[in-house]
Amino acid sequence: MSKKEKEKNQQENPQEVTKQETPITDTPVKEPDVTPEGDEKAEEAEEVDELEQVKAQLESSQKEYLFLMAEFDNYRKRTLKEKADLIKNGGERALHDLLPVVDDFERAIQAVENSDDVQAVKEGIMLIYNKFVKYLESQQVKAMDSTGAVFDADIHDAVTTFPTTEEDMKGKVIDTVQKGYTINDKVLRHAKVVVGQ
Image 1 (spheres, rainbow, N blue to C red):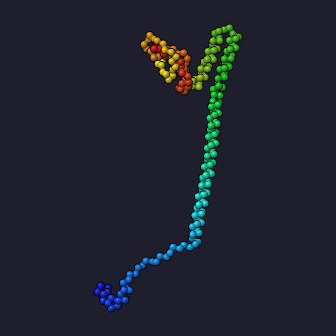
Image 2: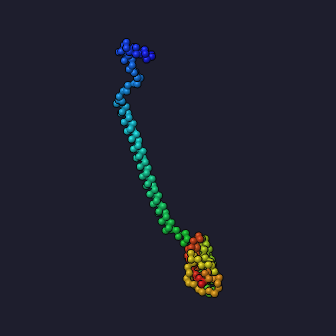
Image 3: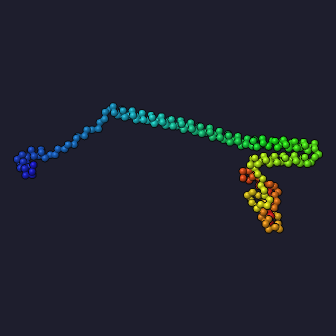
């Protein structure tokens, strides 16, 4: 319908035109949000169920945590006891292996009392000494060879210094007063030495 026709129509029937001009919208009318009572109860029941599940999981986790804590505490106590036993009885094996050397010394003492042969006694003592040195080597204990070596404060204790006429012996070990020993390449006892000056 053109504008002219509309104007003409409006002049002839003013009431009809106003009715037609009011726009008609297709928007649906909103109904108020009212949920039935049954749906609310179902939602509440779901929330309660979910809450109960979370509580059950939490309780289970707490029990598991307490169990693990108790188990770890028992483990810690057991390892401390084992460690104390190792420290207490650690030397047992070493001392057990020394007993044959003591037996040999006792036999040597009896031989000295009953024998006039000095050479036989000397040989017996040397056998015991060699047996003892082999035992120490089996335990990774080794004697240091210090005489003639350069003085090293990490492995030597200087008892005294001694003036030397030889230039190449200055700062070196002239004499070993007491042997030093290492165990597994760690100093067990420092060597007491005389150092050239």
